[in-house]
Amino acid sequence: MTSTTGKALGLRTALLYLVPVAVVVFVLDQLSKVWAEKSLEVGEAAKPFIGSLIQFRLIYNPGAALSMASGMTWILTAISLAVVVFIVAMANRFVSKGWVLTLGLLLGGALGNLYDRLFRDPGFPQGHVVDFIDYGPFVGNVADIAIVAAAILIGILTLRGVPAFEESERA
Image (cartoon, rainbow, N blue to C red; front, side, top):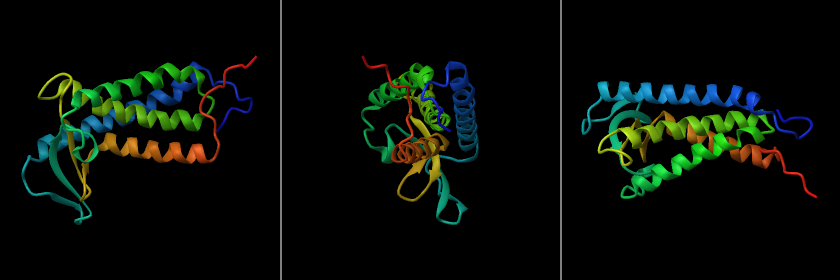
């Protein structure tokens, strides 16, 4: 999946892979959150999905994973925004379709949670993220699944030595 010349795929090609992946993740995330808010209530008992392994339980998370940094929602908003800007700004330098697809997952997940932080209560930029997939030690959402999948793929691509970006020319 790497460009054979080590040259950038080009902005058009990168966006052809990046945008659809990000849009699918974002739409699935937001639609699933709409479903969760209509089907579940905060404080009610978890509803089994795959036995007690995975259940559905609605919470509004002001923090990051495991509700860490719940008093720093605006910092998490800034970090999400920085991730989005970085991926979009670097799109013209990608040399690997594998990295583009991986960063599409990360972009879609970041946008899903960023949307919540910007447009949900208690308000801009401190909105709480809708989480509803209960794994036992933590509760997450579709955006979180995409972000974790991207992190795993980033590790695999890095271990395999697959370059992400076109290296700048050295004199």
